[in-house]
Each structure stands twice: as structure tokens, then as C-alpha cells.
Image (cartoon, rainbow, N blue to C red; front, top):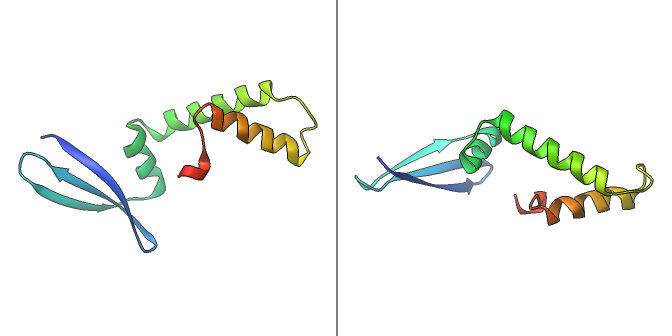
Length: 90
């Protein structure tokens, strides 16, 4: 059974809609943020967490400067955005 999913925001609740293409059925599931991430990336939460951690470590090695400064943090975020990790989109 092939299913496609769409994430919807309903008020303060998050839900994922699964549409069964074979039977034209629609199923609603309430999901936590963790489960939504698993659905989006198709992998376990630990795998996603490890990937994000590695990308942050790479960004920190690339950016040089005073680690306590605001500009340093902005440069880290900019580096992550360039590598496809933009928290502002989620």
C-alpha cells in the first residue's frame, strides 16, 4: 500500500495526514515534533540527531572568531544554512 504524507498544523496541534492512494482513504495522526522529524527524514531520530551534530561540528571548524560573540553565532548559522540546515524554514 503506497501512502503519501502531508504535515498539517491545526491550531496548536500538529498532525500528519496519510493518504492511501490505492483505496482513497485518509488517516489523521497526531504526532510529536520528534515523530514529525522521523516522518520527514525517513530515518530514526538518533540518525537525524547525529547528522545535525556532525554538520554543526563542521560549521564550527570552518568559522573562526571569538566564540562568545554574537557575530560568531551568526556566522555558524549562516554556514549551516549554506549546507541546507535552515531552522527558520521549520
